[in-house]
Length: 125
Image (cartoon, rainbow, N blue to C red; front, side, top):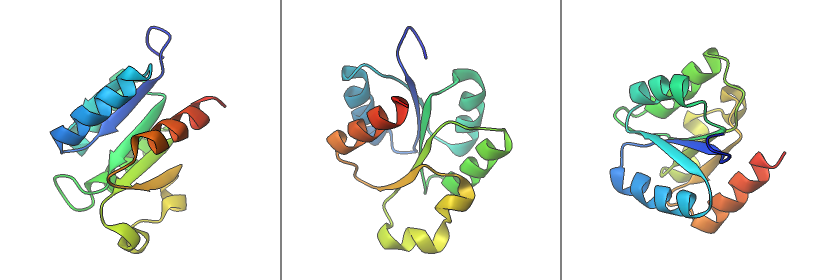
């Protein structure tokens, strides 16, 4: 939490997606911190203390998102992590959500209302 608001960390190499998501999250009372690479995301995780994380599957490398999630798990992360994918059903062949400890996998583009509902439900526990 930061100033009484939940902190959402979003890691994606598409700045337009980050900017649009920031508008949605911040206008709904959340603080968003962002990283544009897996390496930057790992550093940010250590300083931002996010309440929930959103990670894009494919960034600078095809499996950058899954590698970041593995590293977060190794760091002891227990916060909810959602992975975003634009590869559709092919994701299940590349990623084992349970093995990675993901809270869920979302298809890009994510509907803002769906994202907000999901975040609110996850953080109200």
